[in-house]
Length: 226
Length: 226
DNA sequence: GTATTATTAGAGTATATACTCTAGTGAGTC
DNA sequence: GACTCACTAGAGTATATACTCTAATAATAC
Image (cartoon, rainbow over all chains, first blue to last red; front, side, top):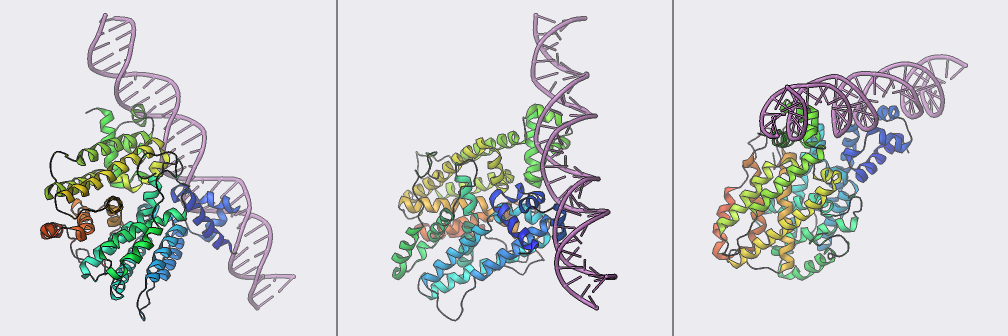
């Protein structure tokens, strides 16, 4: 494997684990047992590394959110979208954590991320549209669909941050993909009122699979969310 | 005004303006034209300053979200809650930006914030309950109400971050309270399906007041969100 | 083989950051 | 006037951070 790719991989790993803010270029080099000079031969600076990682992330999500226009949408499709998006979120979970700082430090990234967001919002909206065409949810006016899509986006992209803050644990390290996917429960909650009678039960059953474990899985809390 | 209070005020101002990450204790001292030594006489460290600011924020929101149990809830109450919460969010807007890092650096803050979140969730849920009692929304099972409250919380606390990333502008400085309050539109979107016929129109009219300005207020974007 | 190019090591640098230490100052008290 | 004590100045420090520079080595081209 090329050094350049190793740097990207190692950076992603460290960023996800400790947060971008807590990972320096020296850490990355040390982690790979290469010199800082070597790292800077391959990347002009830290922002460049992050930007390249974003491009990967973007490509992955764009791939996941590709919507087949030649056939109707099924419940399985919807499940796949949700599962995939949360998988992507998990793999690049450092990204949304320090998003604002990252965008402030790199104008390219700001612009690209903005476009990326708009593409995602359009995809979510299109998914709703096709779910309606398939008779899974009731059709909605475009206005409402846009606002709903935006809410879905907000829930999806910030579910992880919420989980991390809700955790009483000292380090926010202990967070699993399974927990993350409880975000699907939250997203499906948004859809409930719009489900058609024909699909209502099936979607509710699907949602049930992602229901968060009850409090008590952790010894520390009296609160609703441990 | 006492130096200690001036430090808190100045810190909050700088944090909100530039982000906590970009503000050092030296900046704060310089901003007040006092010495770093002076600052450290009043606060043990940066975390302490942030913690005190959080206590203020917490107090403010707790005050806003106090729910009168001796009378029915009105639409005006709901409007007040929404307006107030977004006002609070605005005044302490630095806080949610670097939340994860802040919680990782201060265990006191982590614990307190967790409790704070749970209190807020409980309040939101109680508001829904009372809105149902008042015949404004249809009553819901507790399960659903909790999940909905959590979605409301996610939308509220992350609306600002979304706006900042959606802005194409170089610096995310240009963000107004008015724009922020478009988050109310998003929150009310969540309530739409649950509105009773008696109140539907009135709430929809209220929501309309917060509708985001159409794209075109900014020259840079082709996307849905500027 | 020689020239060229890609890659790497590793020491080094300028700057920043959080924080400390010492030496006070000024307002009140007895 | 001596004393206290909350408060302040400002130089200083240890460490970290992003990044640079030089020189060397490995790979490839001719």
